[in-house]
Length: 263
Image (cartoon, helix red, strand yellow):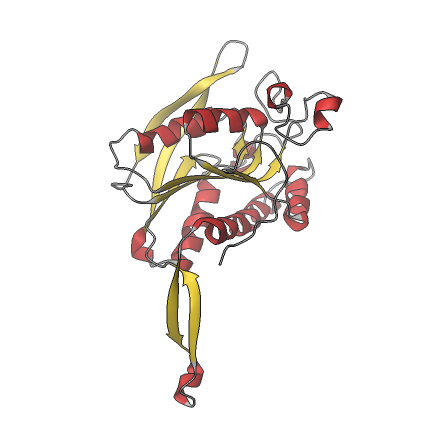
């Protein structure tokens, strides 16, 4: 049985999934509002990522046939559920990209522990930041520390990071799992709240086969006639980043908002 996603039509390729979910879109719009601050901000992030990780599990994870006794078996020999469930021993690594990824990663990690056998689920930690030039333009990303718990060979490796802007940070983090030092992951998946055309271009070019899941695509600096086309039709003319590489319309700096820290 194949799980059917409700997703936005686009021309970015089969590995990019922008969800078409009115409830989540509404919650995300509220998250991006200037009126939303702590503690409501983190409550919304938690709710959105709980839904997003469930969607990824439904859409990407393998299934297995199971026979599971119910309470009715005590009185009726037919009290056994038989059907497909998620393959409980799917090895998974959730990568926390500090700092905006701390809370999303923890939500995904906790959810997976409730679904899979906990011994096959691991959380890694990568500390990184954007590198900017004198004009405050993003020129790359740098890893200043990490805590990686072992091999990722044969694992689903998940990267929950709210804002997919330039793709620099995620591309750098992904490279840590594809350089061969940690084995060969089974699948690489990003979980983003908002992404841009520039983000999609970078990740799909630098990491062919990476799967992208997002709640919203922002390309707010594209010309009106480009915005009138199906996303990806005129990809080279699409833009969702301002001169500082912040997403437009976006929602501001989520790392700052999540931590109430403005430095």
